[in-house]
Image (cartoon, rainbow, N blue to C red; front, side, top):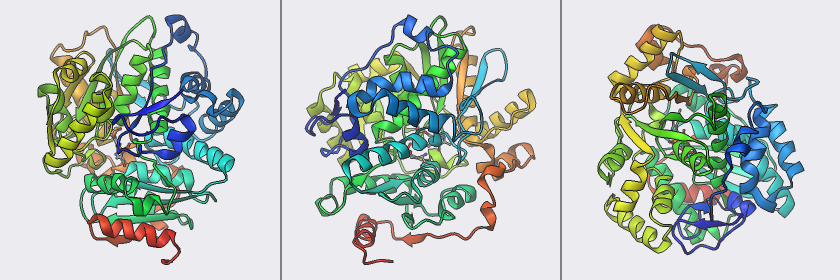
Length: 472
Ligand SMILES: Cc1ncc(COP(=O)(O)O)c(C=O)c1O
Ligand SMILES: N[C@@H](CCOP(=O)(O)O)C(=O)O
């Protein structure tokens, strides 16, 4: 399998190459040159398999010759039969006749990011060992990617990780899950600004000659294709349980960087019968505006009770626009150059119509979010986190508006454990969710992080100086 950049001028790479490269050298994002497709019989044959085995089957076509089937099997068994605190990895919970939750928070750091980052940590290790190389990972987080990535690479010999988070804009639990990990290869940087600023700095480092000539940079954000590939798997396991391929399923996905919902799009392209993908946003609703009116223009970021989704520039939307727009790299590069200059762009007709065929969108404000937390608690005795509540609120709103056939099950992705956001949950239902014992004594451990000004040069120089050994 070869991968091409959305901006058309970076070299095509194989799976090992894209996993280590992260962002393409032309600033674009890598995508498979074509979508592998399963027949109905092949999908049916996955019914009843354990999660790790579905993972091998779904990911195999993307990996090509980069791993043997035996190597992939060992990694998937280690990760999915060993690192998750639920035998199903991603269990489904029924809320009522039409609504389901897909619990994605049974990994070590309590959010859906673990599903892919536990795997990515193993892939890095395998490929770096094979190449006898080291990797300097730079990442941006609005709270969850950071802890999952740090957990996946802490203490590993061949990787060093620099994780940028927006100072004061992640929950205490999220921050502590990053800053209390004491390993020599882990560096937490709290920057002034928003997640979008942190993400822009990270992307810029990949195209900054001063950085790339000195360091072998790697990415753990969903700009890295391997992240998305691993997230495709739980669309398969959940749809299979609900009757796929003989029955279509809809998904409601709390969305920020458009990675999780793009994985659903990939599953649909691979043949999984997905009736609709609901892009559920908080008030930072650029994606809703883009999908409902074609207007992708970034406003300032408003802090909310769903901080992980306080994002305006959604990296993976570029992947969708490229795929729907006829995979024209030069046109995509021009469209993105325009967006980078003016922070606004208009979708083409092909992009808008292609998206409308599968995606619906719905913004959910903070009052509606709190109400969805209450409804899940009162109606189904489920304590859900606010991000999940954005997804559930959108699912209810679109079902009530008749946008989804009542016979079609709607699965809301439960992207985080409620104990990551105890204040918002307690305010909504009067119950404070407690942290599972597996995260240990989070509030008794010492934190370590540096605070940096919000400009690009400060973050870049910190990474360069540290990696060169001049900071300690
Ligand atoms: C808890 C939670 N829910 C939802 C999202 C949004 O997911 P994505 O960025 O893949 O759209 C995030 C951040 O990525 C998150 O941490
Ligand atoms: N919500 C995310 C933001 C980064 O998203 P990613 O999926 O691109 O890593 C976070 O928790 O950091």
